[in-house]
Length: 616
Figure 1 (tube, one colour):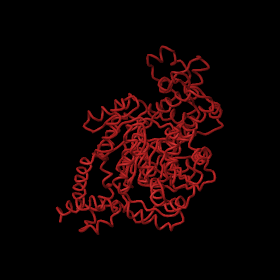
Figure 2 (spheres, rainbow, N blue to C red):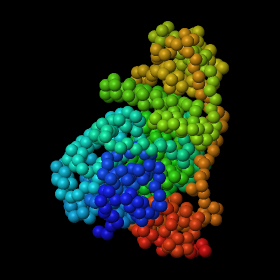
Figure 3 (cartoon, rainbow, N blue to C red):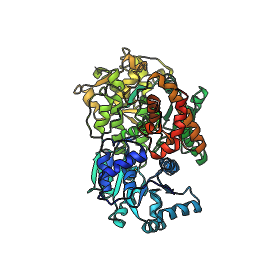
Figure 4 (tube, rainbow, N blue to C red):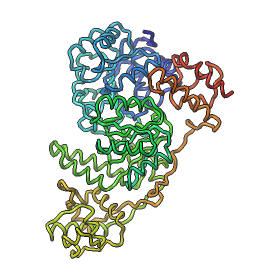
């Protein structure tokens, strides 16, 4: 195999890393804390890295693996994506391989021999393979330059994606005490961070915590009112022809939503654990390789997806935690271009999540943890402050109003909802105490509005003293009140039917000891009249460059199909935009474009120049 390995002693000048960055990856400088992290690991130090999706985590172990002597071993749970990860490295001229259960004996044997012979720069392994003694023996036969533990939050039972196989990774340090380890994750609260360090024996490691801010993503949370139609409007008006991910809570809703989009002329495929492995693999492959395809999925999809041009992530159901929401939305705009994180959220979401927690398996501590996750997610949904600031605060970071989320663009009003809250809580109390009955939102709101429905008359609820006392608010407004009382813990959901009950905090409201401030959606937000994502200097492209960009995309698509790899493996959209704007005339000019390293210049440079020649 040909490769790009630069082998040096651990004490070499860190500028060696900059040379690899430029020559292999085609970038002139590091971002954020990358340089510090890479220098530390090259020097043989252990590191725990918290960096947002799209922040450049992979370079933090790939470059040290290329600089240090030996093979970098990457532990990753993403078996279905290892081939694509290795293909992307091959396109850069990096000697990479993987070992997992998808390979036949001969393929595994070939990779194992390449590792032993020192003909690899990087070797990807699934964590469960490290429980097998033959894998340990293999690693002892070769020379390991570093261990990279990707998606490190999987070790934490506080996190949102716990994987038991990760618990054994602390043994790496015991078997190879002189080999540096770097653990990386895109999402970690203080509790998750601490558990990662403790379980992987990285308390003494250098900890690098980057900003979790993704300024290119516009966060928007809208009241749910016909979610599928709202989603369709978002795609047609803002993201026509764009790649996107739509998350739903259940497999059934995934199937229905994907079919709905297809019926309305939008290219979409479903992805969930109930599909057979071949269909899942095909749909994931299509998403990675086709331009403008939308995947509708449960949270079973997405971790490790390195597709840089996902322009939007939409949630049609409430995520279970802020960590999960942040990681899922972070799959948009990995290339730094403007992207949208959109969530439709309604009363039924809150009721459903509360019911799921109450009926979940596990002990009381587990349910309390789930409730805390949900409370934080509800606080994000109901905030009247900047959503980005709220997100950063959740991860223990500070920030200023971004001017690019829905609450900044169309600030919602706060209003004193104490009296409406008392009316609603009083209705729930009277149903329980006077009639020994419990009902959900529909019946309670009908009573407040004074509606003599069949159900109201049947139960003689029109004879309650609270009947009709809420006619001053609309049904939609009352649903908002209910939703926010649930979010504030002033109302709770009980039983299989999702009926309402008071909480200990309800007494303070009914006893006039506590004010209740509520959020009022502005008319602009209700009509979804939200500004387009901000443009930045890094992505501005003159109008005359647009046809050149599209021609380059067409050329890239043909190259990708011929090689059987995702288009972004050839060149990223951001790189094509820069080429279309600069219109380089020679290979030497093209070499100065971000994302064009030596291998890509040699493989694709002339093809790019041939496309540009048509526009001169």
